[in-house]
Length: 257
View (cartoon, rainbow, N blue to C red):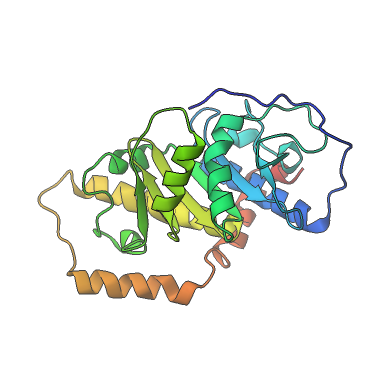
């Protein structure tokens, strides 16, 4: 958790929102609402950020102080890589919280969405010396493709950002030791579906460890399954996302506002 704020002041005139930005805003607001439905939120902390199409160096993020289940597309704040507000807003931004996201966005050209959570199961597995084990098909999605970053405290410095992104490399997911989970997506949908898969894998691992000794598949099987699930790098979430949006529409479509 961190508490540094960028005041919600105007840093320039109001900017028109194009169709592509509007689409990303709706998807990002939906990701926040879906995370709240799954109880992955942590009061007002943690963030999901997304790049603004056609605006290099500009990002969308949740206004600090809002619960995930109340975020709408119009509430999302546009900021630059330093966490400074772009355009007009009445909402504050957690600049320190964005620092981790900003480092990943800067290091990964494919990081159009960065999702970082303090989910209980993810933190619990991050605290285990062995990390995520290939105990389920969900976990094997990340076999050989999971990064780890050791805990360094609340303050997130540029030096830690460099270490974290070096640890992340080209992986789609990371367990931040004693801290939480992180996924990177080429779309909001991909980051969300990867996070859902990772959290379920963590939940399965914790459940399996409550019983007798666990059974792991042979390394060759885990590797083959990982390759099959990787599917030659196909973008994930293409089929799942419309179904998830329909679910939200049935519950509360106000995320689109």
